Length: 151
Ligand SMILES: [Fe+2]
Image 1 (cartoon, rainbow, N blue to C red):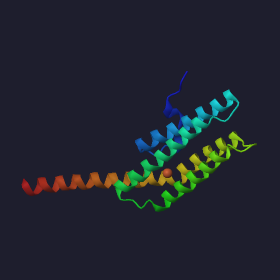
Image 2: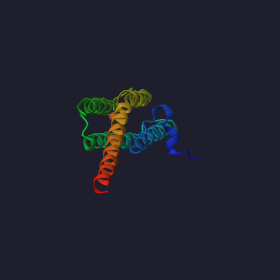
Image 3: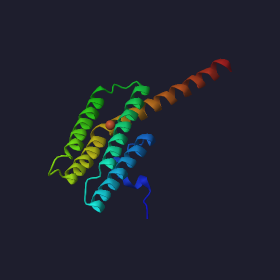
Image 4: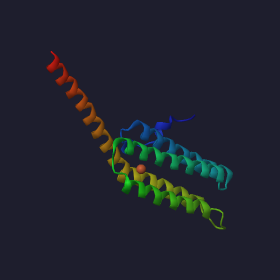
């Protein structure tokens, strides 16, 4: 039976930004399916690895877009994304070499996802929520003051 994709995201890694949480859950699900597929075939599954890499790159662009729309400085976080994508790209390319270990790749990606969410994305979530809350508060204040001056 197929699990709900959100169940792939441990509650400790939920950052309360639905678009990001859904993508994180999907990344963990895709990584899990990639691992299962490699075990089932007893071989590295290049197409699935490339699909996972494309999902990850798209996810990094989502975070960058959300931060940009909110006016946040994303330079440091964006650099962490570029370092991660370069590292995973190199590991994928190295999978063509003899003796390559797909399970080292899976452990690396899994570890990186989790650490990155805790160290970077959690703060991004806090900053996005604070800005959204401030914006709602400002709108409320404007409406309230508008009512007072017109009434
Ligand atoms: Fe991130």
